Image (tube, rainbow, N blue to C red; front, side, top):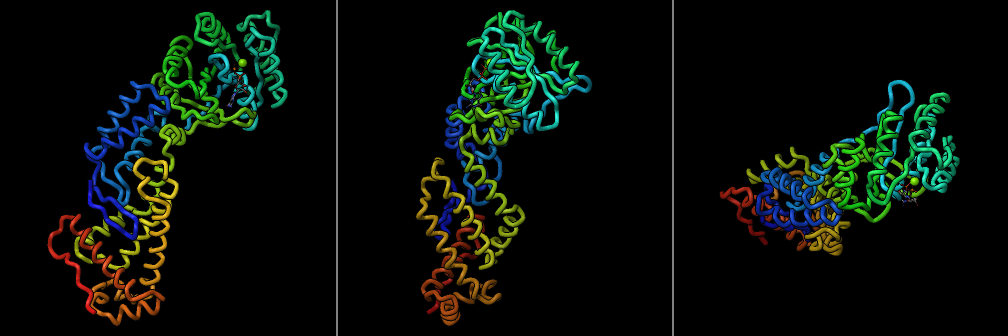
Length: 439
Ligand code: GDP
Ligand code: MG
């Protein structure tokens, strides 16, 4: 690990690249996070291996620790794995768009049917629902009631009609009514069984659907991989809808869906209300799976604060021993901004070291520093030596900024300390002694 630089009470860790060594421990945390999110072990193994290989050699953003930057890399990889972008629903070029919903019992198919109708209605599409769960009268009633709630017609027949026949009749009715989208709800079972699959195949043959969406409960966890594989092989799906994301589940199942089927998650349900359906955003999901959303915004912030050009510019100045009060202020402010971010980072491994009290302290000392630097002349800012050599200048700055002479001396010493440390860091050997303050 690298040298620590203290700025106020904040520390930055200027390790320059990610190495095999400095990613071992953070990789362990990431592995644990994925397993806790219920991503299946083989998927985790493959993933951790490929990310480790890729991460080694990556340059570090200034002020960001290896573990934090690694989380960002991992997040980006997760996003890619889940399809990168939002996957839109596909609509038929002519005739009604037909959406067939499948999934185990209780995952939320019937709820999703009505939610989806409302979702599409808001996009200006006329919809019709088909009640295909004929095994329980209550299931038909449930869809009829939800249909009324979202004001979308429901096609239902008795419990004595076969689902494939209902599908045929419903589709006819939809064509007659000229609706844009037909959504068919189906019966689920507690487990995958042959009767369910055969029935779905039959319905699919009749409907020739535009989309076959597998509804998956976010709580499904590790079984999701097997579930998605089977449904995809047996009936062929075009995508998935993940429900109950309003629960505690970190949703690792989302990773399995795309990994094993190659099919995207298109929508997510996050509540029991009819409005609780939205597009699936891979980046948000990745943050949720990692459970480290705060680290991610922290790293992005750091990236923003320390634009690459700035960092290079700074590096040049340090190399030529010209690191002055202007740079000092820039650098310190950048670190302080990150300090503010780190206020919310209590839960992150390793971040526990920075306490809120320390951050407040760092912010306070930044304000003090700023007020002293503000009253310096441009020349003094650029040539800190002037201050090191002249007690009367320091006295003037103390008076104008309302600080003590001791505080000014401290600031000057800090600047030179930083110069030296940064020069050491850059491997520049010449120069770099701290000028003694003359009294
Ligand atoms: P189906 O058997 O697949 O048709 O499942 P249902 O649509 O009947 O839903 C089963 C239960 O899950 C119902 O009590 C729903 O209210 C509930 N449910 C469905 N989707 C969600 C969701 O996104 N969040 C929450 N919290 N509950 C949901
Ligand atoms: Mg149902």
